[in-house]
View 1 (tube, one colour):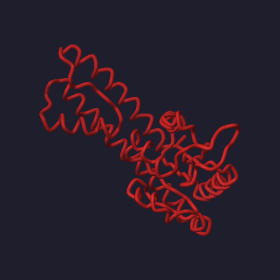
View 2: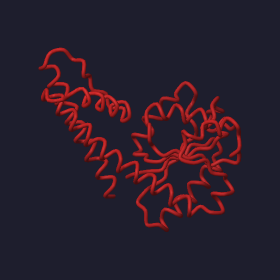
View 3: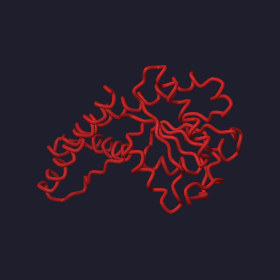
Length: 219
């Protein structure tokens, strides 16, 4: 089941946002669910990749000021939302990411505006949540649709390379898609048998991944 993920160090604030989101999603008859988490420790920041993938997260919402509170013996962390977004983008180039914050005009946050889908004032969201949740739903669906299309193209290009029918432009596009989707296939393998073995395994992986995303869209 596709989910929206919330990251915030303020438990009460996090749970309130989750409740509001779930209420609007239910009103829109959306199958999207909501999960939340306290920020991961500084030395475990790479865990966000696993958290996003394991929870089938298709949209992220987090606070800017997430470095103040502790919870369950953890925290406070040493990073803010405008820093976390750069870590997330290492693994998920196009996943929709929103900030809902009481510090909308923070200079450091505004400098990273291009990394976010939008920066939303907390009062704005509380007063007009329905409008914003509609945007979250559309962005999530667009993200899934785009992944389906690009995975299909990646699979096609991988098959061309494996068959020896690719040209230079195909290889350039393949590498770009590998980087964007974070799916690495070694196009520098020497022996043709090695190429075929590598690509056969990756093509099967891409087929399974594509089916998984298609199933999310149908849910």
